[in-house]
Length: 120
Image 1 (cartoon, rainbow, N blue to C red):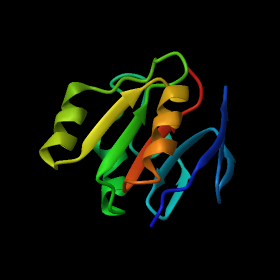
Image 2: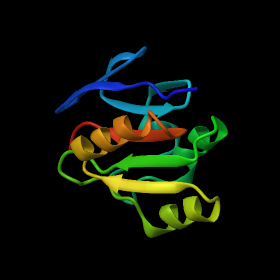
Image 3: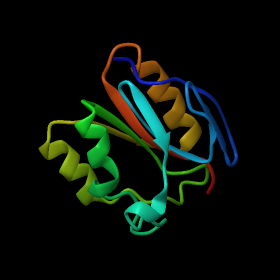
């Protein structure tokens, strides 16, 4: 299954194939949904935690793109990157616009998932 394409990105807005317009999104092979930070207590600090990513791996992702926000304020702790590496998952961390471009390129050849934050 292919991961949905992110069609457009701008401050506070992500347009995602099959999902429409959202502020933050989780996408994976075959689907996606709006990313609600309150589900796992996510905040800019300490940032993205394994609990935010588990759903992506359960969907079969072998690569994950984690966006840090447009101003790179969303942290990705080393422990999260190590957690993914221990599961032999390739991880990419980047500013949101860059992360979207990378994700869209990878989705053609890889079971890729991502977490995308469209503001700070």
